[in-house]
Length: 170
Length: 103
Image (cartoon, rainbow over all chains, first blue to last red):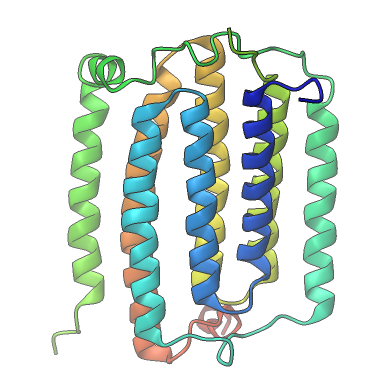
């Protein structure tokens, strides 16, 4: 098909979708729509992970981001009853300045990455490191201590969120 | 044998996603949308880490992504708690109204 392999087609379509949906997140006026577009962006990124045979991360990404974090966002937005009418808007001048600043950052980054060496992901589709078995072995041997620290971090965040979120005791 | 994709395309894709997130942070006033744009930037970096981990056939990158996800979950929990508390006190999450530190 036009000299491209099926992997390259999937990569192109997923990338196009991810970028378009990310743009919709920024430009959508309704916060609820923004959340839903962001969920779809995350699904596209999970597709990229699957393309690189990082199966464990793809599943964790969908479960944690699309499943937990975005639902939390959606809950908070619904709780605050935000919609298109209550949405504060910046002036056009600020938006244009933001766009120009972002465009210049893009220009600089793309310019600096342009000279990078072309390296193919040669082990594409045959890479075994992303499987649950292999990643689990690394996680529970080499990275055991950071793993335990992460659990303490999550516990601290849990306690902190409850402490911040509850009504003040007079 | 499946043909590979050059790492440069992943670099480009991650850069574009990161910049979109940065523009969102600059161009929006709703704190929750700003938060979501930060998540987008985190995900752009995650994608790059996974692609380089695949390139070098080294699983450390994917383990780092796993930890970044854990930290992002903690960040979102605390951040949304702070935002809902701000909303309870100020009745708005417009960043331009949250200028109490100025005076």
